[in-house]
Length: 66
Image 1 (cartoon, rainbow, N blue to C red):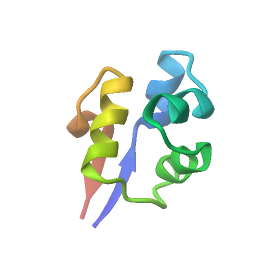
Image 2: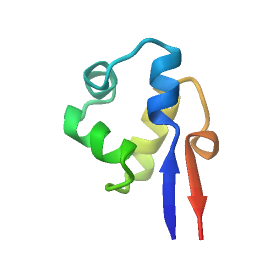
Image 3: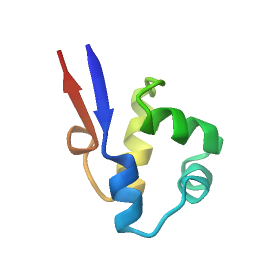
């Protein structure tokens, strides 16, 4: 199973950089980069924190494909 994210799209909506989001959720900027590229599977806690920071839900943020 592979997933895509809407992190980049939602960051742009709020004029937020990768660094801004990373600082807000307590990770490195590279983590946000890897998430956006689908190369990193976040923990449930991190997914929740990112969704909260971007004012959305986990289901809306991550798009799963089989």
